[in-house]
Length: 84
Image 1 (tube, helix red, strand yellow):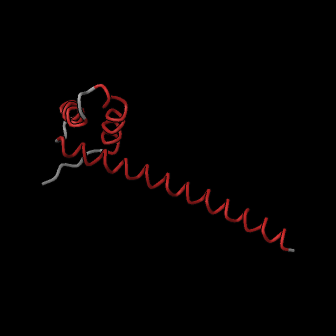
Image 2: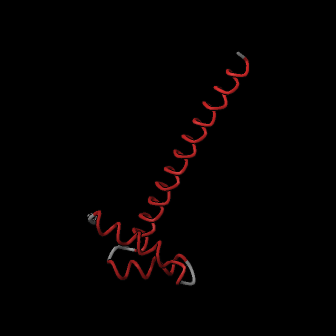
């Protein structure tokens, strides 16, 4: 049976990884140390970190998409103004 961890614990573990992973020889060592400090298995921490990274990347892509759409609207407006 899988253990349930609070969102707060997941957030703290992920933040700790983000803030400290460069202090370790490898990501694996960082994850093992964080797992030992917070309690979940290393693979659980790794999963949380990967999900966080995917969510951040998705948000960045959505923001890029919004900027590109806005630039396209401006370019289209400019072309229509020149053509008129």
